[in-house]
Structures are given as structure tokens and as C-alpha cells.
Image 1: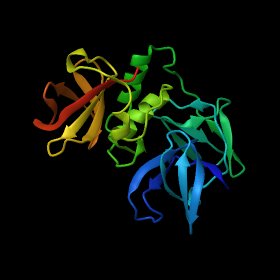
Image 2: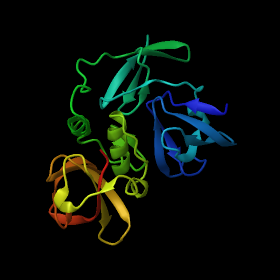
Image 3: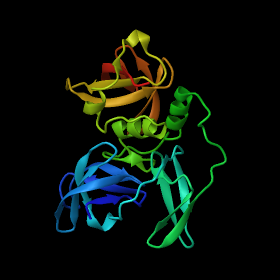
Image 4: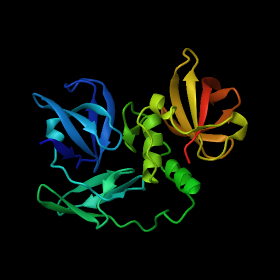
Length: 244
């Protein structure tokens, strides 16, 4: 049992091996991991996609398997004979369209339309917009709850681009861009009003509007002095990074 794969919609990754511990990230369907340590009914893991470490409940363990495609819809359904699994954006899925869980066969819902034919910037912005009104959740990476850096990571992952998990890691990659040169899909990193450390991130939908997760996934206008929410300056710009 040295490796495993998430075969649930998502599995919380916690800071320590107890159910009341802080959720620091999450595995989403099809993501695999290496088991580093065990403690009672908990597994300390390192994810294969972004090398994140934390604890998951052993109840969520499934044998290791690998899938060769990535879900780019906000979610799709996998239908079994008597049940279904919701597959979130960024999940690893089998290109043949089916898989087994506990000896039950699940078939992926066939989407009527994909956005694979679109230019990459349009794919990214359209995917991001499908998350509008998804609630904010610290450590979340799905439409049921998502934090700011998890939102950016999953949107880019769905289009074949890997980003680190946390804002402090994301701000360290990409190409530095000046505010005056901002364009669609650039990531803007912010500091809050009481700290000089990076605390928030969002993606530009054009040269003025930014989509981000703060309370919920929403769109706001970016000003030269920062990001205003409900008429008040909530975040100051720390850096602008180009990832594509």
C-alpha cells in the first residue's frame, strides 16, 4: 500500500492526522499519491501532481491507478448501475470513458461540447467562468468549495498547465510583468492591507477585469492601486506573472 489514487469526488488533505485538523488542500478524483507514513487510521501522503504533503483518512484509500486525460468541465458525472460520482474540473479521467470502483463499472457522461479547439487564453477564461459563485473553502479545489490558489491551479491544470499549489509557490514561477503590460490570463498576486506577504491571487479576464475566489468565485475590476471589493480596497498588488 505504498501508492494510492483518489476515487472520490475529493478527499480533504489535513495538516495533522485527526479529523478536526485544518484542511490544507485536497485530492480530486484520479489524482494519485505516495504514502509516506501511517498513524492509526491516517495516511501521510505526497501528491504526485504537485508534491503536496499532508494527511488523509485511510477510509478514502483506493489502490493505485493512472488515468490518461483531464476533465475540463466544472464537473461531469460518472454513472454506475445504482450510483454516481461527481468528477470535478482538473480530475484525472480515463480517455476510454469508463473505470471500476469496488467492482462496479462507472461510465463517464458524454459532454455535448468541449473547448479543446479554442485558443488557450479563451479556454482558460471560459473554464474559469464556469466556477462563478462556487463558495470559498480554504484548502478546496473543486466547484463545491475552492480557495484562491486552488482555483488558479485547477483552471490551468484543466488546460494542461501545471502550477504549484499555494500562492507563495505560484508567485515564484512565471515571468514578471508590469501593471501597464497586463493581458488576458496573467495572474495578479496581492498582499492584504496589514502584511507585505502574498495572500491572494486571481486571473485577468481581459486588461481590466479579474476573476478570483474571495468569499466565492467572482469578477471584480482591477485598479492601479489594487483590488476593491464592495467598494473598499481589500488587497494591494504585489506582483503580476505571465504563465502562458
